[in-house]
Length: 314
Image 1: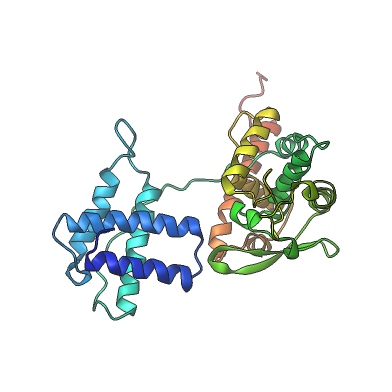
Image 2 (image 1 turned 135 degrees about the vertical axis):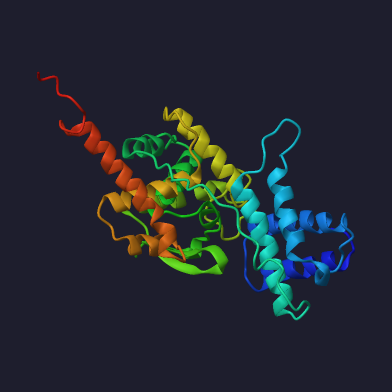
């Protein structure tokens, strides 16, 4: 960012979200990108002080992001990206108001872009089983990768929660683990039988061969003994999805989606699933109920003789 007053205040805000709100590195990096773009947008209009920002400037910024593309020949920014940029700007101006730097919030009447309702795409139970069977159990990496996927599916963790696990967070005797979720919120989640067995095999037969000088307490390690990254987990999952003959790309979050959907299809209460997922609001969890309703409709349309139109009887 430039050296303007707005840029300096933006840096103060980024320090605040790290120190006070405990946001993840990924979220802070997104805030930095969006606010850097915002400060540059305002500087081109000779606005360098937060006191000089008005609602029309914020709306113009949102419109500029909406009209932008990812590069030459690329498509426009998705509505979710535009909404995220506005969210960053709104949080920034609320921070300035709380700190007494400004007397008003210019974002208060700016309308958030309407987002399409995207339903999760869980895997089928047979697809999950094929995926979990894909790693080679005769190698340390295969044991590690089986444990990773069993925990993602069996506990419904976010990928950042999984890669952040330390050995001290696990209580295999009790069948539970301590997880640090969004906003630094801690929760305890149960570990199912299969995930517990996979973890025990990995910890006793594979992790010791991966331990290195940089290991410390991390549960899941790379070949160099360091903590496994989110990106590495995403790549290994994509590789195993291909090996399991799953026709679509599979991400770590798809296993979280599958965890929630299969629980609800099995009769779990939505508020229990909310707690297991670490959702702040039950409204976030309820999107999975829409998925299970659609699944029920599909089964009905396929299986019931009176749901498929004419039976051929004259």
